[in-house]
Length: 135
Ligand SMILES: [Zn+2]
Image 1: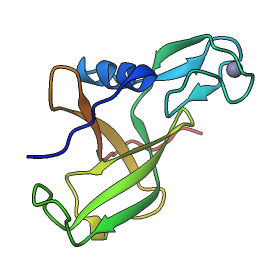
Image 2: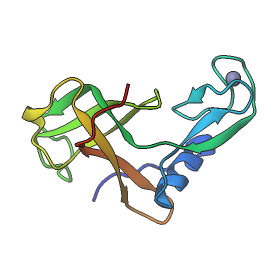
Image 3: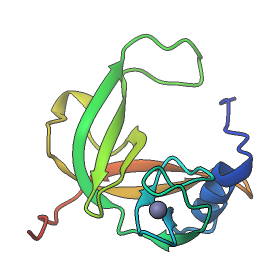
Image 4: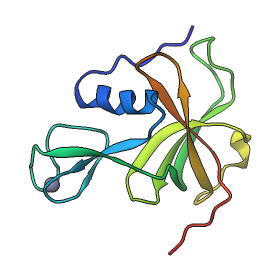
């Protein structure tokens, strides 16, 4: 049995959107700066006002780590946790799926997949994406 997130506050809202099948990130309603991980105040302007805006889920691999020795038997090794820079700019952490961790490369195009695990939580995962970023 996997240990699952038990989110509270703004983090719970993020996971609730994911559980509904929508990848949305918090965004400052005053200056437009993305806020991720979710938090009460904007790091740019200090505003408390925010909305939850949909994002594409498409991005590129910014960094990763590969685990070869699982501390919990629920995890099958090796597995990779990736940091993805979304096309919209924010960076998200998620598990890698549908490819071998040893095939990871910087700037690899990926897309988010939401894995429902309960009524209130879905986990963000990333798989290889075919679309090229439009610049
Ligand atoms: Zn702001």
